[in-house]
Picture 1: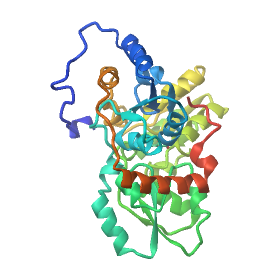
Picture 2 (picture 1 turned 120 degrees about the vertical axis):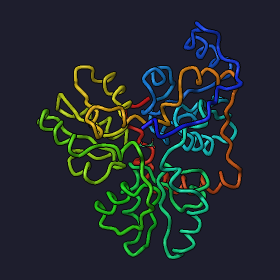
Picture 3 (picture 1 turned 180 degrees about the vertical axis):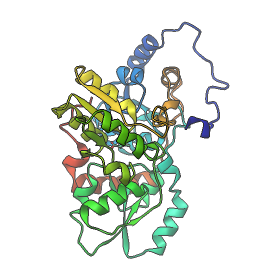
Picture 4 (picture 1 turned 30 degrees about the horizontal axis):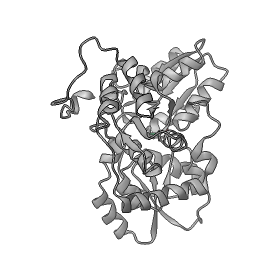
Length: 338
Ligand code: CIZ
């Protein structure tokens, strides 16, 4: 998958650390010196998860960082996640190790196109998945996470027409679960689209007692084989609480690091991609963040995430509507991350 994506090298023109620099020691020195909090999404490489102050999903991380007195937030994740941190903490400096770390869902939903789509459906409200740009959040009525969406939809009048953006697989899953007929924006996540049904069937045949935990960004033909469908924090909770010794995990496989740390006696197997044995379910955007870039962004406090104030205020309103309607589901306060 990585071969399909090429990015400008963000290290060109920057003073690199001398060979042999102990990057972890330097990051530890700088985080104290700059009063920084380091956040790592579940989909980051293990070394980055291990040095973070908090590991979790995008909303949970942003809320935890907002609650600290840190002046700097280093968001080891992708751009829309760092924007959420900035929306919640406008007075903190938010840096992202590599500004190229985007998201195929965000890319699928350019704000101009979304605004036109909304204008063409004036009787619909827009329920938008958190995996989108700050501008699209600002153009939406309610932001949802995969944990909060079903609960929020359940509170909307049955005859309320709804646009769901940008993930068509999550939207289709929610339509099936809730019996609604939301109008779906045609976006998708390149990581979750890469799971192969035939390879999953073969894997299940080799591990007949292993339940499958899947993220609802997966296509329906993968979810049809799942014993549990939920957000990252829910998948983690399921994997740890399940009586099974072996669990098949259908989401970005770096989350397995937290599972192995918490339950070293269990076996966690990443669901396979098309050739049964590829790295095609590693998120290429998440993979852009490296230890060296974490060090550089702490040292230089760049690249920074900025959100224009008018956009931030509107995006915050849409996020707050979710927090009002689903305080527990959205905040996931009792999950074992971080
Ligand atoms: O918001 C997140 O962190 C994502 C991308 C998914 C999830 O299920 O937590």
